Length: 225
Image (cartoon, rainbow, N blue to C red):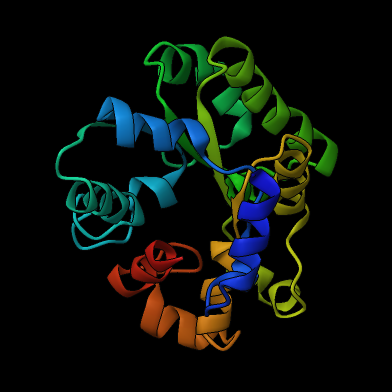
């Protein structure tokens, strides 16, 4: 059934298809929504998950828009949204925060976003991969029914690589670990680079407040993907 799902998703070509790697279907999340009528969603990442740059981060960030999508599309479901994002944090700090901020709340679904901050901390590929895997492995061990989605972001320094369809090394580490654990990924950093025409000037004038943090229009692109 999962293979049929993946093939179906590949056939559903749209403007975001090249930026989504579909892997395991979110069976347990689907059951929580359709049968149990409750879902606990946790957001774990840096300032791009906090929503820095949005005019109102609780309305216009991709995180807030995702929460709004859940509640509007499933009005009969009891949702709990937990924001555990901290600006200027990467997987190094994330591994230390994991038990208290992620495992103890026991979410059903986690959105994980740390790739660009791992770049800013100058983590090597191996360091990034090890820490990303630690987070995913510990969640899987402690919360086997919890599902994860990995978001990979970037900044204007990555536009050259993004134009070639590539990721910065820390983003690639996140991608490779997610693939190893059969977790779907969203390359929202590559997408916003493309929407900017890979122009740093366009990015900063139309979609962001600086070299990395989107404005409301930029967060809308993240959310749409």
